Length: 633
Image 1 (cartoon, rainbow, N blue to C red):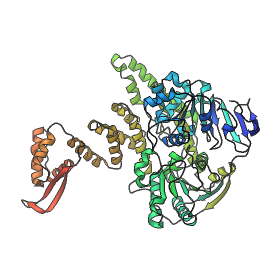
Image 2 (cartoon, helix red, strand yellow):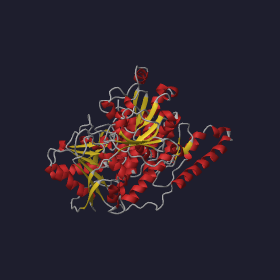
Image 3 (cartoon, rainbow, N blue to C red):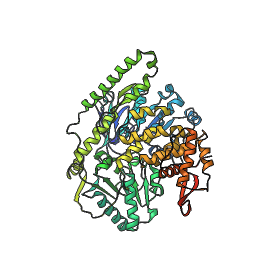
Image 4 (cartoon, rainbow, N blue to C red):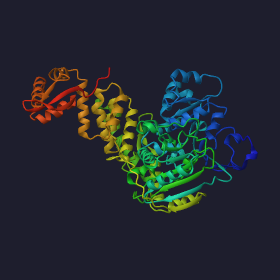
């Protein structure tokens, strides 16, 4: 790291640990130094230009970010970089050939890589080539916080440790504590402004924080017709509920509301779905979930509203002080027009003492048990071949808020999941320290140096922020499960997921995947069906499974049933029972003794419509429609 402009530096403690550089005014890092140092980098403020500095540096770089939205946003801004990730909007997944051609082009190479695609980059370029690059993992706090449901995020740490120390860096403006002893040995650099940014914050405490937030949004929409509004609320269904109430009860124009969320939730928001194109908000009222809390740049002014929902089913919406800083930092045209935070007191009460050392000891004890099992299996020639699979099946969860503190690394070895330990500690401390009373969040924001106005607000507005029989926590578990299934290479590995399931909801999804996997050639189609069925009970799922199995039957059973019950034919329930039993007896199945059961069974095969106007032998008839599941050609 070389200094480019000494005049922009107030103080530089180069020989201390950590190294601290205090900057005059608010310059970008690229105006001060020529490249990022290695190790852990605390850039203190959002928008200080760490990523841009690495892109402009005179070396080959691999810049890894947690989400497609972040990588795509940066790729649009920096045309010289090659985006490596899945399709998102106008930015497409590069081919292997494009990756290789870019790596062999002239000039400095800059790969902008979504975390899930880092393995692919290594596979295409080769380990030896990749290790000659400088690796920057950006927004590393997001890797820690989200690793509990995206295993590949912590997998990036395995690649990080492969690089020489001088060729790697972990970067964030809101660093969390690290429990990984190897990371604690990294050099650390802190960059901060002489005068930290001071935010003007209106803090609203309420026993109805969602209603109070709704009132505030509606008031701003009416009183500030030329201003845009951003609501940071990490709940898709909660955002939809507020949006629909604004339309139905307050007359907000439908086209004025947009929701920014992760790719796997866009199907849920449907007509509200939005992209952040060139940093410009598409709606007057814009909701955003955690996928947009870090990394993205919004290039216009707006009113920022943050919601921490204290309801037990919405614990994942609670925002730490550092998360609030990240959200406010999305605006690149500071200061914000206004910043408001709505919150309540949570009844969630985690353990009084959070001991990182005990969590690490528990993880290591579990690994030791697994290694003992491995030794026993190695002594048997037959079992030795199944060792890896058996060890994966046995791994369980450490019962602290459903976090798993053991993971498999790139070599299929069990290691401590330090990022999950970091996330567990951070989330427990956020809930316990900030949200168990009405005043602590206020005090922490004051300590951070901000101008904070505290308000107690009442609201009679009721927002039904979840559909009937809906549990936001359950939905989150469904999303976690589907994400893990997406990463499966071998469908047989679903057994490992079942055995390591972190909740009953996850187990249910994994079992359903296993039950249906034999009937679907297309994995995406199977996962989409699982998502649609996630709110259905066991009976509805079994009916779907039977219908699908029937539609794609190749044993001759379907042909026999369709011959007995051709489309358009009509039968009473006695005839239906007789026909089904005729088919069942020929195929060795148990016969049906109830006419009602017979009709229900036929409904699994066909769309059957009751005809009350036509009778056969005094009984109403049922008309046979098309197959319940239509076969895709």
